[in-house]
Length: 350
Image (cartoon, rainbow, N blue to C red):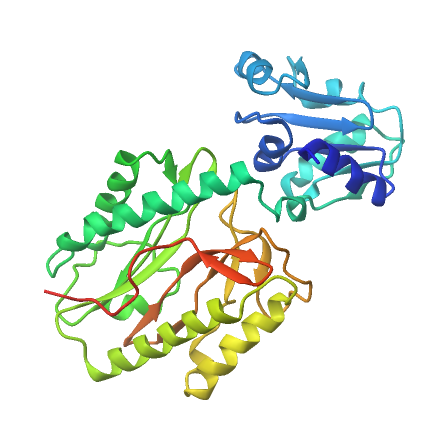
């Protein structure tokens, strides 16, 4: 089933006869258009892409199956001409309040329904999987190139810049999120974006990064030690590594996100560090860096085969430091396939 057929089947299930879509990733998924500042309308017979003169030629080239409408004074006058029904929806998470109000004013007879479309992107096609594999390979190679240059005296932001440069040289178009390089006490910050702090001897250093290749994201985390690891650092690293491997061992389609998360969380708790692992075990990856499905305490839906998720347990000790190890994996019927290839053993860097 192609992506528009998948969308129309979902709309029928939801008793919706037309939908306006503003999320850039969803528009790309359903049409192939990679530009911005656009609005997609889909019903049973029509798919129309409204954009401005900066993107009309690109839209016609990338989305040949869409009717391309060029607006002059905003989306809404053109949008009001499209629907034949009042049973309409929008992907409301991507509309601002002002935009929702403007669309409602343009179509006052409609009673709106909000549909979240991200779930339709959970199962990756062969083409999507190939792009994600390449994005992961770029991230892996970029970090391998950086490893010999990680040492005391370097600033976190300089290491991040070098890592990002490596990824660009290898073919990425941009980073998939702000690169995290967090050293010493800052490694206890799960999202410690690279700062001007200088890396010192004895520091744990967490690198969490990813790139975008042909629209698709990668995500990886590795933690290293500068110099010889202290006993407490070896202890928490060993526990996180076991937790990471356990998550990958138990993960398979049919289990819920709750079940996989609980297995790993219970293991970390049994080692005495339950309060130091606060975030979910993982999340989906695709056109967006955070997608469905998720591995956390709230997701009670079975994981589908063909989804891409992260497995990223961590232990964070305030005022001391932290460790996170993250892989990107493909969910299968009988387990999972790790896409990340960077070695996970503890690296003590001179």
